[in-house]
Image 1 (cartoon, rainbow, N blue to C red):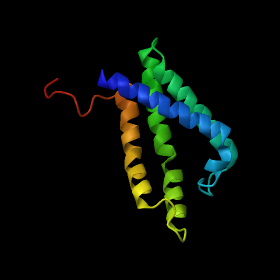
Image 2 (spheres, one colour; image 1 turned 135 degrees about the vertical axis):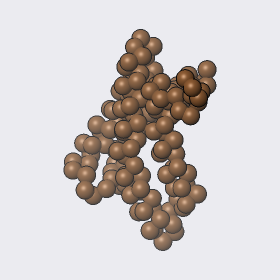
Image 3 (cartoon, rainbow, N blue to C red; image 1 turned 45 degrees about the vertical axis):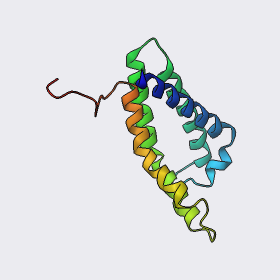
Image 4 (cartoon, helix red, strand yellow; image 1 turned 30 degrees about the vertical axis):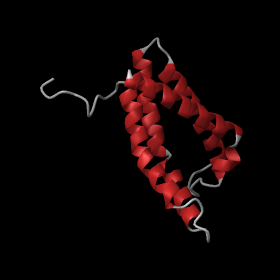
Length: 134
């Protein structure tokens, strides 16, 4: 039951994130690392990837599709981590320290949690809840 509730929360999170990536891409453009080619297009495509992953994670018909979505969303969260690090560095370099460490440190900690959550809620992994000897 907990896994299902968290899966639906993850679905809502990625639907919202995807929506904002597509409808407000300029907000994300400011934190995009300079080495990313075609940054505006990447933002649009990441938004579409978030929506597609959320839909695949939510669908009840194919467990294999949910697992694929879990792996895809975990890889996505790993790939956008540089943008989050870049955002933290840009923000903390501001004279007023931007949003500050109270915002950025939990966000950095949340990234591996999102990776794990995508895999666990999609039933790709059971760790750390597996029993010994199974």
